[in-house]
Image 1 (tube, helix red, strand yellow):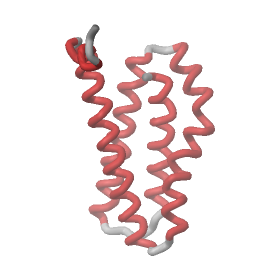
Image 2 (cartoon, rainbow, N blue to C red; image 1 turned 30 degrees about the vertical axis):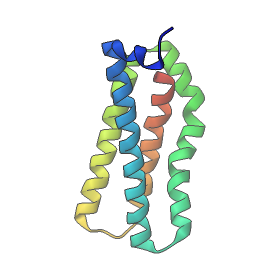
Image 3 (cartoon, rainbow, N blue to C red; image 1 turned 180 degrees about the horizontal axis):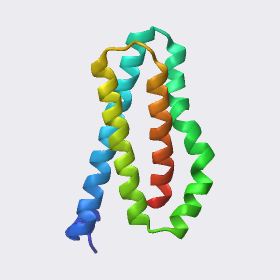
Length: 125
């Protein structure tokens, strides 16, 4: 009988699991930071709900199409493209923060793109 950690003896799976855990942690930290920033800019709780909607609505609209794309095209390339898109979204949010603007709509626009990338990431994985 083997224990549950014997799967970690496989090097590639260990890398995959580590990347998933660290990626999930990064997404959660970014989500909290975005929420704090938007609330600091507007002071409106409604906008906090819109953050979640801006990320979930593209996922809901694109998930079936993303599943088809994952079945037809190379999943490795889809995942790489999604990581690149998420990186660009994060860099865009960073650049926006550094400019000091106080409009909220650019944050929501980037979050829609981020949610779209996550919609393609899920069936790709």
